[in-house]
Image (cartoon, one colour):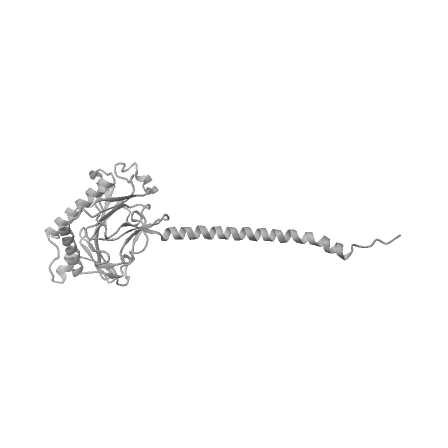
Length: 306
């Protein structure tokens, strides 16, 4: 029989071309899809980073604000409390700034109170605290009682009845602002612990209170807070650098520039995560006034030591 010849070399080459193309094209398509996916991920990531780094000024130093309100969507932090404190739990969440509540004379006297306390004792780090309710003031890496410490060291107790009266007067003004702006009946809004003066400087951090630049949520940090307020006693850009209050959000940050007499109040839940920029120069004074919806968390107005 006549022997059948195998395929010619040309036929072999022709037949081998098509099988090689399929996996090559497949690899190209897979590679293209992977690169497209990576590009999309990169865009989403950079977009999120960009949004988190975008900052708008909610209250600038140059502004003179009667009242300015910025609404935010309430978090779920209050769901379990809505039936316990229906008249008080935040339903209108956000932050408010006002330069028209505390007078310059009140600011001067409040600032003198905190300076007198810090002259008695202060932290070894960058943040010192004076709490008139407990009578405590920062001392090194801890706290001491102002009355006992003054007596022990043979110095005059630095506060008088006029100081406490002024403190109560300003606290009542802040209480009225919060009650009105967040639509809470005054009788359902309670002063709570901690309420305190603070002094922030550029000294190195030594205690947990020195790490004020960490992002936090007041309701998680303190438990009793439903509404947080700050009364500023120093001017941004003049008395100190840094030290601005930043509200953090994926949609963009909102910044408050402190100003003597400016009050900033906000709902204390996770709708308002925030931090204070590290003070880079000078001294920043402020008074934190906090309120709770829970009457069991209420504290009395402070009184002079006996």
